[in-house]
Amino acid sequence: MAVTPWVSLTTDYGLTDGFVAACHGVIARIAPAARVIDVTHLVPPADVRRGAAVLAQTVPYLPVGVHVAVVDPGVGTARRGVALATPGGLLVGPDNGLLPDAAAALGGVTAAVELTEPRWLAARVSGTFHGRDVFAPVAARLALGAPLAEAGPAVDPDGLVRLPPAVVARDAEGFTAEVL
Image (cartoon, rainbow, N blue to C red; front, side):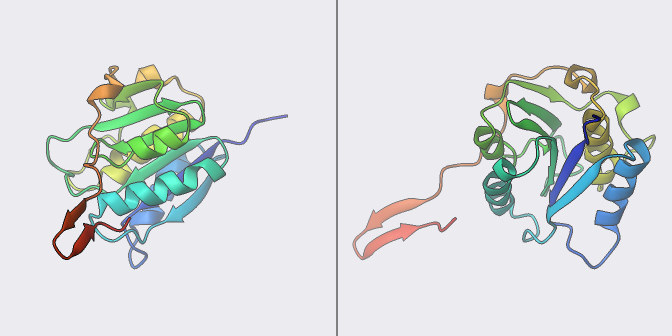
């Protein structure tokens, strides 16, 4: 019995244009048998903390597969793209704090790579659409069973960007807290 490759997508792209469809299309061209689950595309724009929370809350309930997350206010900057292996699946996205909580929910990072292998990326990588040109093609190749190590050089999981802890402070009038 053949195994069906699964890819999930979590983004802040919204639903009023073709960004999500472009990512679906890239995945379908590379891995036509892959099934794609849209977690959400309505994460508030650039809200990495909210995207990280949605992803971490959702991935434990999805089929084992490749989970792409793109909430990326640093696109076009020096921030790196990464793929993380966990006991419960693979995560692909920007190294901006979006992925570590989901990795923990899937059993912890067992390997991590920086996405630099040109053969795994679009022929022309846009400075502003890494979801289509970097993350979707990498996810499709991983869904087909390509080895993670071929996507780029290994990185130390302890060096991944992590979001700061939620704010909780007591003051004279009570507490100030960040609601997650």
